[in-house]
Amino acid sequence: MSLKRLFILLFISLFLFGKQGVIARPLLSFFSDSDPATFQALISRPQIKDILLEMGAELRMGIDDFSEERAENIRLLNEAGIPVYAWIRAPKAQSFTFRIDNASTLLKRYQSFKSWSDSHGLQWSGIGIDLRPAPEELQQWAEQPMLSAWNAYVNLFEQEELQLALPLFQEFKEAVHKDGYVLESYVLPFSLDENPEEAKALQYMGQILNVETDRIIPLCHTNMPYVYPASILDYGARARRVGLGSTSNESFDGLMTQEALDWESLSRDLRLAHDVCQEIHLSSLESIAANGWLEALADFDFSVPVFLYSKELEDQETQAFVSQQAFKALSYPVLSTAALIILTILSILFSFFFIRFLFSWKKKNATSQQEEIDYEIISG
View 1: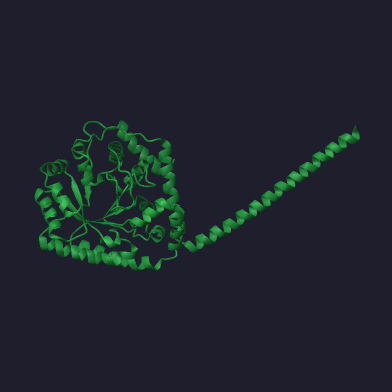
View 2: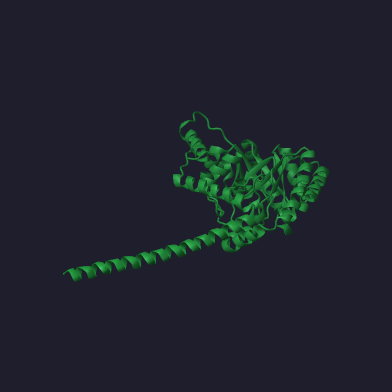
């Protein structure tokens, strides 16, 4: 049994058998990406701010415009004493996420944000950026996995752009730290399977920045492809924090349309995350409030046990191990391709000689049987 699986089972065992008294609640945080007018209408409802304060909750506010209306949203949160992280987003034309192809806009975007924030006297607990692939890439993976796999393979040989993008990200990161902010990133959970110091295949294939930030939040949305409840235990335990959702029917502004999590599924994910995480980040505040779930979250019982089949844990362990080894191997695409070609040729040769041996053995066996029959006839 691997150390990872032992770690997961230990947490589950402590959860089921070792807890006494009051169950510690994790920090709850909510993403919000609505337009200023929609958010203004939501946060102006007195009970919303009261519930968030009662929970000690934080907000990750999507900032893709630098308007007076958006500043007023943040001032209301500052005055209420609700901690706010600035989730700085790329322009809509760039699909809101930061990747290799738009890394040059990171620092400019942050500088525009900082000027706007300072001019309005806004207070922030930290800065966050979304480092996932472009929505259209995720959509293609869901609908055309073979074509996406081929495109990812071709991207393995496009390594120069990443080398140019990394210094640009580092410059942005230094500016954030100079201004006294912590920097966090929102990533696909599989990003944790790649150690950027050892491998960069995922970055090449997905054209993403898998880089170190102060806090990494893997978004384990179990209504998205290739993400399962066991993923929460695995990636959540590694990061000590996790993003859950989505509680709305659409992600990425209309792309990657998925059925929203229902309350039962969200409750399961919350309890799994509580077993291994100190922080749970939910997407999104607007949809949770619209569903009437905010009050239920304030009194949510994390102590109810959740059981997963051992096969689910084993499948997640296998998937993560395969990803880790694949990322290491594919970081050297020429060698990996040569090795694959050699293995393919050897497999073909082995199959040819094996089939030839079978035919030869069958023919020899048939000849031997015929000789025995002829001998019996002559002897008789």
